[in-house]
Length: 456
Image (cartoon, rainbow, N blue to C red; front, side, top):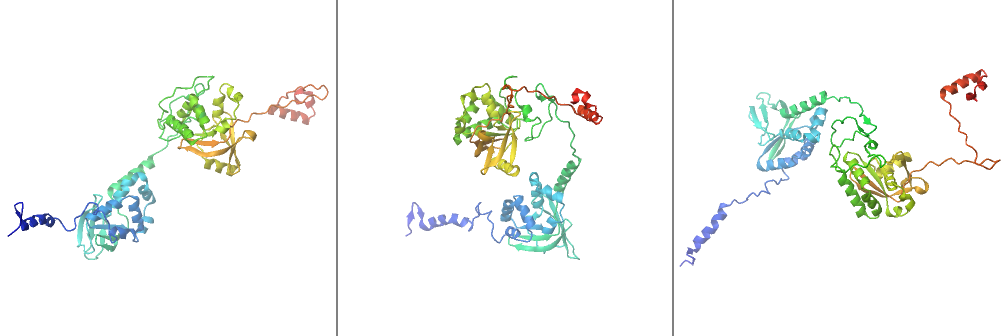
């Protein structure tokens, strides 16, 4: 008597359970297994073959993944040009065109033009046929019945079946195959480069009253240097006009200078030991606004930031004069982008380097000392203490251990008269002109120079 389970007999139940198992294939292909490449693949053989130049171009064109997916679905045929064809027999301008980053699509089209998603062996029948490549272009294969030679788009196949693998075959050819679209693109670029000329333009004229350009400069490319020097772009001082109100950015809108200035001030606070410098920049809103505007217009700055210990040594007299904090800070701003490495290499090479500052006409002197960079003179000098606190390509902040002051010209010391004891009267000797000196020399040759008081 057969056992029953809820109205079904046991053999019938077993048959129903086996039906889904019989319907499934023995080795189902999962999406992850379709792109797996065997060590015996034709792609591995291409990378290890004598066609290394082609393999390098495939890697530079980022086509390995596409070829792996193609090999997983089809057998492929690769027509591989020799290394000599790619090194010596290729036009240097065309090779430079292919390797430019902006021409990646042309390079990919060229390489995929050498791959047919069908296996074509040496037993290829005689005659002429067309085959679609992975670049969606057609290749014409022709095999001569009498001579037995084989050509692909009029290029001779020198080594048929040089590499044979289960998933594809590689044939060696004498030169590179160039599709018509890539050739047209190269010729168009070359013709445009040949006929392009640089129109000469005069230097921009600056209005001395407003320190601005008299006419609008031509549109500049993003990232190019500004037309005005940085000293012409600076806002006039407090005695002439107030600082400009903060705007949305420079005329070219390439950089957000206000955000970059905020970033480096925030970096000073997080770095530690530069709170006084950050506090001055926050309180001197005109200075921070000016720095942000300059960076927005494309200028670069290097900030020599004194640490808190150095700022604590400033006296009340040094900070009480009107505009003194601004003058001190402007002397610590260099209108160049310098890093610790660039400044140290400069002072090692030249011994002493003078850097312009935004406090005209004063310069800050840098020299090598104790394996570091030393700024200033004598007791007012400072060492590069914390290098590269903030470097973003537009603003560079270098920490120093002292506050720098420009070296003032010392007044001439007046010596007292030895007889009266009173300060001697300084007699200003007028400088004679070159013409008068020449005339006196001519009169001296005739003994007549004593008659003229100007020649005595």
